[in-house]
Amino acid sequence: MVTGVTYRYPGLLVKTVTTLDVLSGGRAYFGVGAAWNEEEHRGLGVPFPPIAERFGRLEETLEIAHQMWKGDEKPYHGKHYTLERPLNSPQSVQRPHPPILIGGTGERKTLRLVAQYGDACNFSLTRLGLDEAQRKLSVLREHCQAIGRPYTDIEKTIIKSIHLTRDGREESWTPAAAIAYFRQLAAMGIDQAIVSLPNVADSEPFELFATEIIPAVEQIEVAGR
Image (cartoon, rainbow, N blue to C red; front, side, top):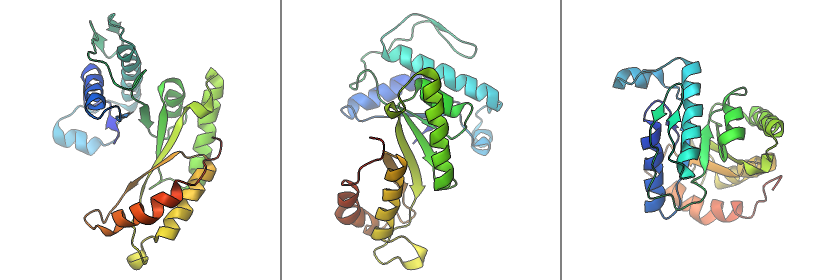
């Protein structure tokens, strides 16, 4: 969902997302983060720089993305990347660009980058509790205020693993429990919940989302909107 900034050259990454946006008729997001999975990097032979460098690369990638989606082909010279002609043609369907979603919850760097460059943030609620997520949103609001950007400009998204069954067997969630949870998220100001399903090979959770959960959640109003 969110690529690590270390995996691809930024110019090619922006062109890839643009192509996906064109092919999907304007439904792509540009999800990116500073990367964290050192084991995967080592296993696949991908350099894993120190965290300060990864964040430096992330910020330059975000600058390059904004420049390319503006159609600005002048050379870009950063500390980590140099692009002599950042051409992006054809341009994306979504204008001014596909939404830029930045994953992570770091308060000093990640959330500052969301406020400055992003259109959406994403918190993993697999490890993060609702109270802590609420505090992270307050920090994001402070970063937005510091640069004079409306907090409401940012789409707030989460990702959560939910084991869903009709009857709640094997310590799973029932549709009612899922709807109640999504109401809590909306009350916090979360705009979009992205769900991963451990029982993804079963048809049952998809049927429950389609017939019971989505119709109910569509009626919920998000706080602050």
